[in-house]
Amino acid sequence: MGLADALFCRAQQGDGHLEELARAFGYDVLNLAVLAGRLLWYEGVTPEMWRSHDLIPVGVDVETYYVMLQCACDIMADVVATLGARRGQAPWESFHKLNQWALRNPKRLSAEFRIVATKLPWFDKINSQRTRFVHRGEKYHVATNRVSFGMLPSLRDLTAAMLDFSEQLGRSVLSEVDRKRFPEKRVIDGVYVPALGHLLTKYRVPKKSKVLKLAAQCLLVCGGYVEAAFIGYPDRYWWEVLLRISCALNAGPFAANVPVNTSGEVNGCVFVFSSNGVRCAFIAYDQGEPRWLVDIANRAVLLQAAYNADRAAIIVRKMNGAVPQGSTIWEDSVRNLRGPERSCGQLHEGGALGLVRN
Image (cartoon, rainbow, N blue to C red; front, side, top):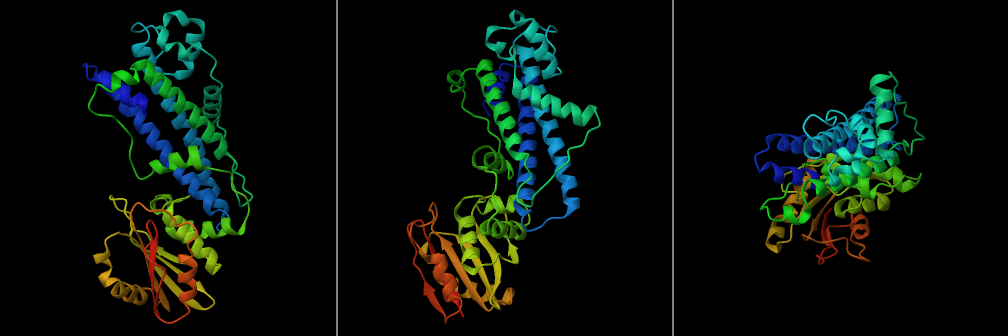
């Protein structure tokens, strides 16, 4: 968020309007993150759950996404008009108007703000789509093959282009070197922020597969993108554990409890499976202190009773760890669900400990 940071730093010289612009831009990006999370979740569950009426909110979210992209651009227009031109000279309320004006009058802008005085194809697409939805009465019609929706790559590319331009504009507002003189740096934070990173850097168009369907089942029981991201969706530790257990059992969980907390640590997330007539439950914890494991057996008993499970296992991750390379801890846990009470695996550096109860 270089633009917001630069505006806040400049605002310390007494310009309250720059602080308003910084906050407005940050909120627009946060709104994009929320919409990205919702769209990623809807697409993610499509292989398992498809209802025609679900396509209506997907279409609304896509239209809103374009509106928010343009809102963020309009904030940048105000930044350029405020800092890069004489008062009242440049259009400030619309990025489209500013871009057209700057193409005709580039020398009326300060040299460092002439980045807006050029053709910007990414913005033209945003503006065209938003105009169709807002002013021409068109609707976004969603089609799905129960694997993907098809619009997320375009939204990803347009979002990346808008944010890249905002970083350039931020350097025009105040250089990165000058920003370092200030004791604080502004960032965005929130439970949906991971969705923006997911869309921009991790999203790949899904392909039909057995694992994709199991992942859809896992997403469904999580209940939403925030809960899934909390356990590491799409590619971090606990999500990988959940997906590997699902693959080993050849079934996704049918129930779950994912308590989201501000610490970011997984603490008592529960996933319940049914396989070959046996109901089994797993409970996940982030914890690395050996003394904490003293009452682990009692926790397994409570878990088994609470979910009426035939078998139960607790999996504990040593903090700051990763999935152990070559470890079969999840497969061991699954096999042992059908046997007598015994411990399985060991506490790896960055690994997990499973305790299974009969």
